[in-house]
Length: 145
Image (cartoon, rainbow, N blue to C red; front, side):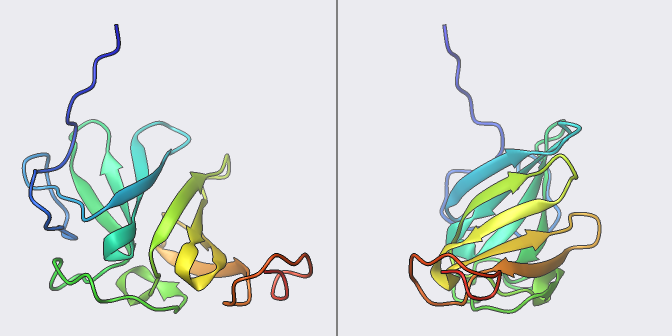
């Protein structure tokens, strides 16, 4: 028999980008999820807040890794396309995350039409491929669509 339970989130539509415990963690629209290689964290694409969050699998608490608004966490209008570190990063509606064997997190930044890499140790995000325009075209990293 399959058992499903709420692990981390409250039931309102607000989001918290501060480091949180189980009772205060909330998400705007969690979509993609991937486990860290050591299974201690789950990485979550919170698409509506345009952020990538880490969920502690032991405590249920969360922390902001990249994107989002670190000051006003209910701000769902802080989005764009800017590589950088932590909350200076701008994403737009990330949908997918994959944590590789190397511990790096690969993000499908859907509305920016790019694949980005996030280093969870430093919070640094960099574009791997995509031009920023929708398409279906093979090519070099910055020419592919």
